[in-house]
Image (cartoon, one colour):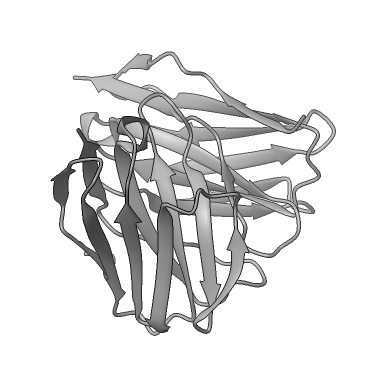
Amino acid sequence: ETGVTQTPRHLVMGMTNKKSLKCEQHLGHNAMYWYKQSAKKPLELMFVYNFKEQTENNSVPSRFSPECPNSSHLFLHLHTLQPEDSALYLCASSPHAQGINEQFFGPGTRLTVL
Amino acid sequence: SQKIEQNSEALNIQEGKTATLTCNYTNYSPAYLQWYRQDPGRGPVFLLLIRENEKEKRKERLKVTFDTTLKQSLFHITASQPADSATYLCALDSNAGNMLTFGGGTRLMVKP
């Protein structure tokens, strides 16, 4: 609907598992973002990529590892997560990472860490 | 410290009335402010953007005001409908670098 897709939509994993979240945008945008949305907390910006280069890491623990192979795809690799990492992970894109422009969000991946 | 505050309590109004949501911020000098709508289980959807030098912006039944002296934005939905029921988020960017900081959102319930 928004031109940003995320898979999987739901994920349950144990603390010792390794999994990856995928995001793809079909809008021709150059900037992509990962956000975390926990219950009763505001959206938190995690990472920003502009033209495939990471321009922002918002003090995110190393158990979250982003990858951006091209401007259309963004991954979030997960390993040895904690139960408090359970949240809705949202991907977004925008025409540029500089200047004033709206962001287009995907539907999110609901992650549960057991 | 920087803070963005939206009323965390749900706003309940009757269909046809005007809904007014508030976004207050402290220790920010935002270059612009955006409003998004989020439905349960979905990502936020952009609604309106207002720049620091603009006082008011309109789009159909939506109106946003921006008062940099009061450090406040108001979001109005006129002639509200049950379909307007959702959570509304405000977001600020201080540097025009598209690094958005979001408020916690206000849930709006429009009753028929």
